[in-house]
Amino acid sequence: MTAARRLAGLPMYEEAEFRPAVQHWWTGLAGHFRTQGVSGVPDRLTWPEDRYEQWRASGLLFGQTCGYPLVNCLASELKLVATPHYGAPGCDGPRYAAHVVVREADPAGSVAALRGARLALNGEDSYSGFHVWRRLLPAGEDARSFFGAVMAMGSHRASIRAVAAGRADACAVDCVTHALLSDLAPEALHGSRILATSPTAPGLPYVTGAATSGDDLRRLREGLFAALADPALGPAREALRLAGASVLDPGEYRRAFQAVR
Image: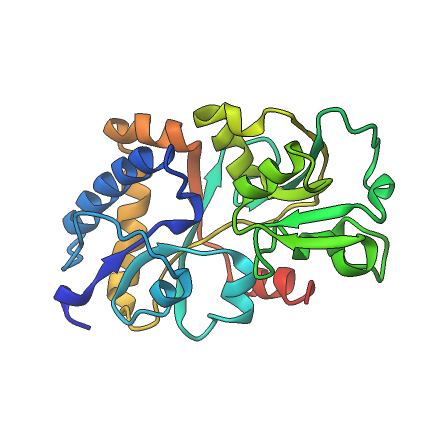
């Protein structure tokens, strides 16, 4: 892999209101990666139209993905760098949860009350938006057997919008996305409320392409932990609720996300 072909993308929290803080964080990360001796580090992030195309790019230096596609679609194409910690309700160190969101005026008092309702989801490759329902519903049931209708909306934000507008009755949303919307785009949550929160699972990991050398993987980890300790990057970390990182064993992801297939 040549330095000229390297690219970086952090597409999991890509709402327009989030991007300035994400780019600020990347600028700091990139500087620490260069200090560690990583070559070809891009100055700016690439915001992909097709996340899978970026995740599968041979020149991917640094990215972030969801645990479900990592295990079930991308295991041979990506290496784990580390799992960030987020200071958001529902997170526990490197683990995160999904919030079940309903309309603010919905009388439902539990997930059980949603049987037959209309579900909005971001996409069927999403753990927090779709596969998490296997851990929220009665044993043996999934979203398609429990809900009366299932509608793909394309993003967590769009799912919340559909619920608040009455086009859907419920959605499950990554707790970090929900917290960042609360901080940076609170109007996106108007008319909705959290009904329940799922059990936790390994969070959305930072990754690199399979072609990245072992030496560069080590340098990426060292640069990441240096950036997490850099006082100058405190505002970017605070804006994104970043609170640390852990290097998890890939087996933790396999155990968590193969189980929901």
